[in-house]
Image (tube, rainbow, N blue to C red; front, side):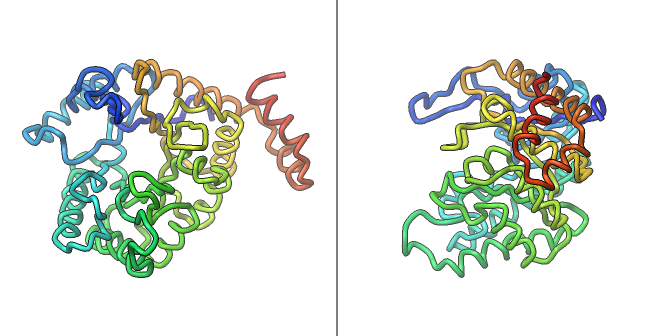
Length: 326
């Protein structure tokens, strides 16, 4: 019901963004503590996902914990940075076993930070695992290494959850974990109960999926451990303000979660390059709260009846009335 939902954000929402034109960034550089203090200014934001290792190696966990406490924030996940330049040929799939060990070690440290902060999971986004060119890799070997890397990690930490955030591409031209179906296939092959999916709404959109359908598939397999929302124009992972482009599909996504009684944090993964970060987060959360109230108004029985007949006109009418009024 409306009013009970928790909202979160990746701490990178409050970072300084760069691209290949503004290589010095849009806005001033910010420390992790400054980003946490900015997150604390967002209405109704209660949890954050934090990258690891920290950009400032001298920054202590105690200092981070103090910053979180003064801003009334808790940690939902720790995201090890296994997607940076040192992993250019992959983290779990790197041909150099020393680099593969480096990735495992980084994830082990992230697991310890999850325990320290009482977080929910280690989030794995192996963005460099995959390939760029035809004939570049042995596809069987790379896919097996993708699964083995996650499996070895999760086996060492059976007390923690590990979530895989799939994405079609970027930074690799083709990522190993590129879709909900392939990721589920890999997780089932890994065969561990503590490995699941973090479904990013924008990744699903630009991968050509229906995010609602992807969520249902992950739920049916008992593997939807977390989610992020944002928006894009389907051609790229633009990480725009949630609901700014695809409000109906976003509403269907949350309808699917509510229908299945999925309970978890509604988390933002947005990159406000040119926008005020706090204002962009407030804008998104305000719309997510509107969606939560709209779900309270929606006639689920009537929607179910319309869907049983594949009656698109009636179903859309019910959704529009609940979301937009009228």
